[in-house]
Amino acid sequence: MSALTVSQDPEQSWDDLVRFWEEMEWPEGSKVEIIEGIITVSPAPAYRHNVIAARIQRRLYSVIPEDWEVFQTLAIAVPSRLGMLVPDIVVAPVREGTDTDTHIPAGLAELVFEVTSKTNARHDRVSKPAAYAAAGIPLYLLVDRWAPDGPSVTLFGDPKGDVHRPLNTAKFGEPVKLPAPFDLVIDTGEFSED
Image 1 (tube, rainbow, N blue to C red):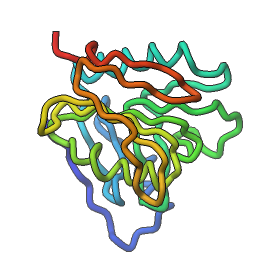
Image 2: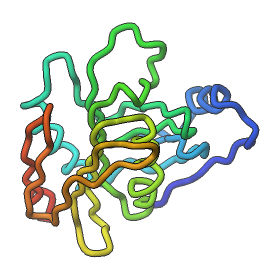
Image 3: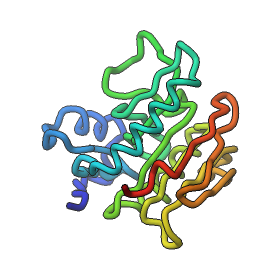
């Protein structure tokens, strides 16, 4: 199943768009994001997608500080890119007394992680990384199961403007190292189909 987009009035303000995103009744279990000002509704991720995210999440818990958390369903706001994005994983410090229960500012994230889905891989390769870089998120890890040259993992960092620099790319089966503050080697062999 592919994603559904919900067009809004192009003159609609960011606050109105967020209010619509928060208040609309979306299909249960779906992933609802605002990507470049367009509300996108995607089906829940597939089994293999979730297995990859769970394995990364388990590894991250072993290296993050006590006052950080690993989130799988947390929305992050990037108003400058008209984005309300829900990465597969967000690592961020826990903040008490945030302004809203529905999302956090993207700039609080230390790491975001995406696993591509076949039908909307472009969002994870182009639109979302630009928003993550614009927000100044230090690290973006992309597991691209549908990459043209075969499944790969790319770690991006050093955001400048709306671009992250590729720090490391590996084919499935090769290790990828996350730098400080994580200092974690990820075994991408775990991502291959069983």
